[in-house]
Image 1 (cartoon, rainbow, N blue to C red):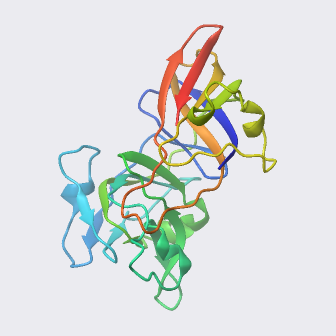
Image 2: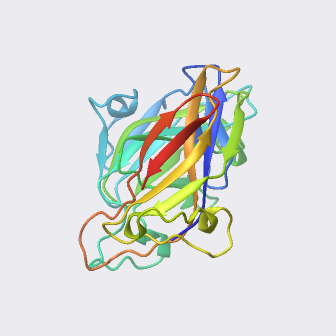
Length: 272
């Protein structure tokens, strides 16, 4: 059920800079992440060689209740702290035949970022959603910068089947980016031929475009090419909700295909 869809373009100059968007719409950048000085799995094995570089040749494979304990050493001369992780998942939800039990977040196959509290218990500070394809996520951990600066450890708790290719900590300042957000000009559901339903996804008003299994939605946005900066990232921003089919043991994603026609009259066409 799509309530609002918009397209965000993020322009910047550094081709090596990593860019991510938080669930509340903030743009995060990472320019110089460094791998941990210590990285141990639940069995006490050193997995540094699996997570030190972003590549598809070697990666850590975790199953439910596995974890990594990471230490980044002593931190100095910084104002921001961001965790950078490249990962993918073989499952996004706990299978319906498994009782997740409390807490309720266990039904989501996420990676949970944890710190030690004063009683030496691991507590959640962030959760990284599962990704079907290789993706880079950036988490703002500035609120626990003091904890990390003292060479304290982080734990990544696995709740699904996750592959982790890289983990690093970035203490560089955020770089300047130019952000533009575009509203769609056209939207149609394959079930209703060419009927334009764009008015249903222009704002959060509980008027939805619905999509059932086997259906597709085409959405068209206006597009302007970059003006000043040479690099661009593009994001689809979606507000709405969904229901899973718990009795069907398959992944149930919404797949997105995109095509871009540039120029002053350009458009971005998405098929969901």
